[in-house]
Image (cartoon, rainbow, N blue to C red):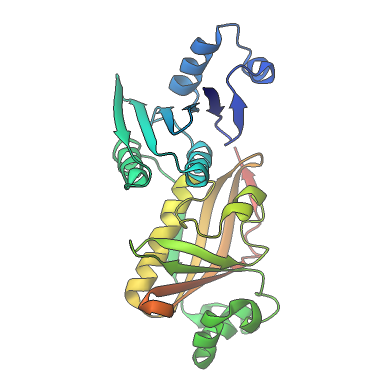
Amino acid sequence: MSLLLIDDQGEFWDQHSPVLRSRLRASVASGELRRFAVLNLGFVGLAISQASVRVQLRPVLVTQAALGALYLWLHKHAPERIVLSWYDGRWRDEIVGWHHEGWRRITLLLEGTAQRAHGFSRARIAPHQLASENPLRQVFENRSRLSHILANPARMLPASLSDRYILLAEDENRELRVCDFGNALMSRSPEWQSQARGRRIDDLPDWNYGRWIAAAYREAGRRGQPLLEEVAAVIAWPQLGTLSHAYWRLIVSGVGPGGRRRLLGVTLDNAGARIHKVG
């Protein structure tokens, strides 16, 4: 059995790693170190066997980066069985199957017990609130081209936006999954970029940010009209820390092959609000 820990920055560690013990200045046995890290530091514990994994966490403390790394790991390895152990004053256990809506149960658990102020905001804006030379405004105002852009964003977007898009498609369970994206999108997380295609948009490195982003796209899909927004977010990035980021976003919805919904998001950094580290 392999015993791993996911730290508060989303990094994976062998439970017996001397480097981890040194960083935590720990002098206790490995089992006690694992318990301490999960209960006090927001780490996630993984005990991995051939067809199953035990996940240990404390929902009220676990960090967004650790949750994002956990979801990516589960999507990649798709274990047949997950033993979910969580602490809310006492340890509780539940067995779920990843292929039978296991991630929904995990999400429900975490949303029901961990309440945080996430530091995200978005507001709908009119195109005239952007400068006339803003390429996002130009795309929004040229409605006749939006369906062509939705069909092939890499080719049809102006050069200044051609690497700043994400294309989503609805699956049979009405989950929004990543089809394609530009190189500049989520460039602070090469690991996410390498695994993103086919994954849910919810499962970003900052788990709370991913859930919030997914809700915005679903809302735009229900509206059925192009949505132009001003966005500000405080995002936790593995290895980089927590950064404040402000940008404009255009979401366009349409119908793809098989009659399933497709959503295109195009973003542009707000140069007037410099990215900076928080904390």
